[in-house]
Image (cartoon, rainbow, N blue to C red):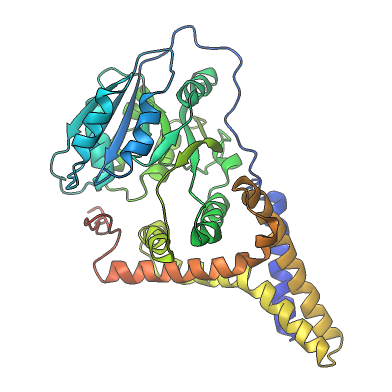
Length: 396
């Protein structure tokens, strides 16, 4: 009991550090910067939408992009990435009734060494001509009117190479409400937005559903060919842009103006979403996998376990050791729960869900382990019938 209490106390101290000094990751106020002055000339923007078997999503999401009330020259390029469900035809029908120009591009076969989505993005960028900005978005992303104007204003007003907003994911079904807020919480913990947005900080990331990129900066950094084999393209793109221009300005934040309309009705679909890329995030390293699962267990599961074990010990007549164990565990559990409340409020969910975060963390640990199993079985990164093997290490 004493050892458990000591380890729980260290976990509580770790949560104190995370809340106080880890880039304000748990707060949700990192919103699009407000720039009062508008550009003297609105730049040319092209949106690039990779789409693979997205016929069901397009009627809900694509019209919101085509209806953006942007004052400048704006058009949309949709790359049909080998769809078999009539995605291209659905897109053309939506484009015919839209106020903005839509160009549907038939994707070419995937070259060796390229990830599927990045290859589709590259083909769309090649069709964008002399556009000064590229807006990379997904086929399941809906945007409120004025979103693009606000993005361009924020990018131009402060010389930003990348402005990215994390889409508000669906949280309608039981499992969506249970898992989605924690998914965003864990992402922010891994890539604190405040640090991403600090020019001198090394932390870099982006959210693939909404990335406005300055075209000259992208080309100068190596273009999309520089991240050709990236399975997590948004984080890779953010890193490439920041690495190319030390002190370069990239911005990532939260929003309710950009939403994902893709449903995840059951646990299986959410499990697949996480397991598809979790082991990729760990660079296919068994050591990092073991460390991640151990870290999740210590940081998220041990505090409530210590609190319950200490309380049980007190009920059985335990003394100071049981009380110490219960107090240490409860402290860590309480700090963890409080830090999760802002994310729950962003998703309009009750703060009473916060103490259940350790259960969700346990699910994520299982999903991460399953991600490694899938990669070892040759099914890593599987998405709509396409399997993405790990990139081969470069030869020296």
